[in-house]
Length: 225
Image (cartoon, rainbow, N blue to C red; front, side, top):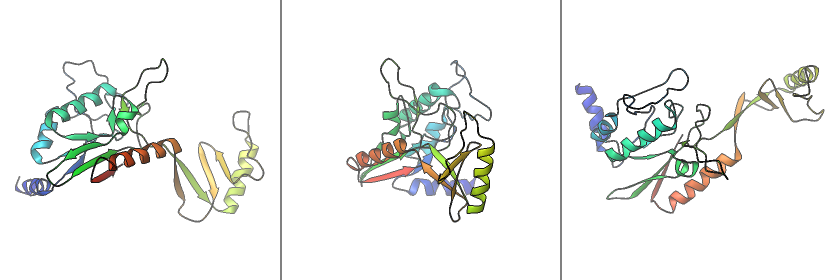
């Protein structure tokens, strides 16, 4: 397709081209891999070499489909990219590896890539070993809380409803509470926009640390989410 060839020429023209590997590409024919949940993605294992032929140098692994075939499928996807000579970031055998930057050395500079995801499947996040609990393969995740911004009048009505429906598991909000959790949602008084997102402090700090470490080892750091 001549039009696609124009796109590929553009991709190849870059000093460094970075893409998102949205779905895993494990060989499922000879392995006992299980697809998790509905709407799973799968691509042919040869895609990694196709990406390289198209001029893609680095890929982000962390996204909402990374673990569609479990940790094993994600690790196999990473292995195939290693085999194809494509640097990747965002996935690993443990959290330390998943957060760590992938680094590409070019004739002009060293480029580091850090990848994370704020939408992901349950148990997609990588974990480091702890005591007798082994490490879990997965991706670098950034957990967030959605905060609904409402007017003072709306906040008063939510407080009234949360108080009326209070229970042992869901106690009534304090009279002076500036934030109310009700129905798995968080509410605060404030101006628009109607929603904001608060990052989980542990994930936020871990990603900032990864960026600082990457900058010590590269000329340019790229962060993808």
